[in-house]
Length: 245
Length: 211
Image (tube, rainbow over all chains, first blue to last red; front, top):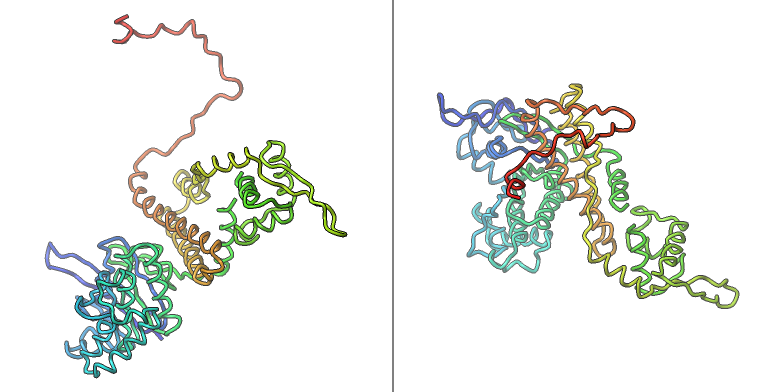
């Protein structure tokens, strides 16, 4: 069953002659446990799509359903509740709070949700340990590298145990190697921990970590590509031989 | 060419015989799956290096029943050749590309849909890139450095090819309005001899008028 389903999803900014169609009747499906990348040139509507999937914005037309629940007509309070429990967000600039430690930052969503601080910190520490930050729990963001800060942000996105992670250019502010590590981590989040990840990126190297790429252009889905191909790994090692020659 | 220098380098590390050299080469490139060198190529290369005075041979009398083997070592000029190799950059050959030929053929013949051809190639490269990153994640960085480095290289090349596709796609609109490349038809056989005497004298230019 699809975890995410959109139907005729449309977003228009402004009205009349100055109206801009950011998304134009988009119908996509994302399966549970899938890692999907959304790609396209800037202004293609990929961030708008992510905002609508996360209930951060309302569609002009059409709908989104998450796990069978239509979110377009939900009341604000219910939507907030759904966001807090079911969806984790990862942003380009980490959005960590500078005065809090790594573990406090990662614990924040559940702390705000009323979980006792000690328990919240325990859950946050578990995710940080899984992501190789067990020895940096007490570090503040400015004591961490960009890649480490983003790992804290991914831990924060997971601390409330949501089913869906939405990532908006999560490697956009990172160097090549840290970017690859974060993409690899998001892959691990789907493969090892069974979460569903939808990631917006304009970076082809990062998109290739996903199971599937949805290509957007001018607010429309122009193509979808499944990335697992039989024999591709073999071809790569043959290619390596060629590079060697 | 590079096998020749790799052999020089491995002999600079320590004198070796042919069989050992091949094993050392394979270890350096991360196994024969990456780069398979036949024993005959090793021996031919050693002979040529010896002729060129870059390595010298001595006989290693085998202990007990072992047969004697030819052991090679780097000479002074061999070291110099290696130093020079390290001092030079390498230009890879990027121009002979099957997809490039496919794209141009589509453009010239009017067969096939260009945007579809590009998207098909894009999907294909993304699949290769996906396989390369998965493969890279499966190697142990402590033990399989050669594999990881080669995959890093493959990943970066694939990324460049994908970016090039984006550019090619953007340029298509400009290219479509232009006349297609037409071959220049030259007469076959030996070119006609140009009789220079009958050619008009060079026009006077500002420079030679001064003289």
